[in-house]
Amino acid sequence: MKFAQIIDFETERADEMAELMRGYEETARAQGRTEGPRHRTLLRDRSNPGRYLAVVEFDSYEDAMANNEAPETSELAGRLAELCTRPPVFTDCDVTDSANL
Image (tube, rainbow, N blue to C red):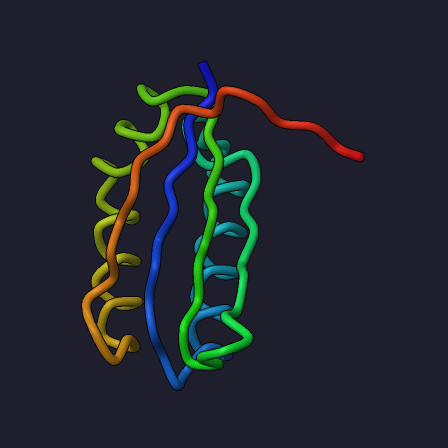
């Protein structure tokens, strides 16, 4: 079953966070990592422009946990947390339905 993690965070440094994410993703592709995310969506709260929700999708819960345990993922999470104005909140979800409309 597909798995998604929602990360709720606040930052005033979204551009720096996006740059870190791009670098992480490029490195993961170059290394041929297979357990990483398959899709991600970044949402900005219109009522609170410093608040974001990142929806990160994986092929399975097991792939997500393997990705979380990778040293480079832990390093990225620490660097991203430093750019936040409050600690991020994580919500783990099973994907029960998805459609491109």
